[in-house]
Image (cartoon, rainbow, N blue to C red):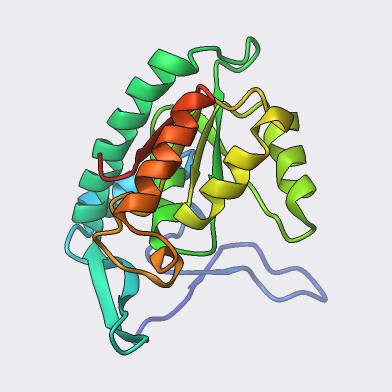
Length: 223
């Protein structure tokens, strides 16, 4: 049974003495996380120390029954690998189409526009990996609100779910700063989700053609 360590000469009239954990008698906690200063470093430490732990989970959607199955999990190690792969792809897109950086910070914004899903976390970590910051986009107050976020944050690259793409392309004249759209869902709709039900390979080609005509690079997270 552990007994607290009583700091010598710490008791004064009207107050109890100071008690500390017996392993930290000097009041400092020696931690392997002491040098961590960013959220991305927290994730990398987790991947190193607990690679086999479940990290991100999602329920598979079955369109034939319009129902979701059990959660399927990705380990920290597998997410770490996916973040590196996606981050590398984003680096190439930024280098080609959005190389400008904030003069003061040397950073770049990366937009995320979707409901809550694992790809949101993947995208955010991929942004942090390369000193980019995420800008969450919402259309809860109408289409104009999402345009406002994209325009005022000077986004050039946006990662979003496939259902957001048509409305963005329809309103692209209001957000001329946007250059690249990355779909969280496969554009060939080979992995069904509730969001992809209104799309198929043909409609995806229509989106690609429209994006190209508008000077927008359209790709997906799997490419």
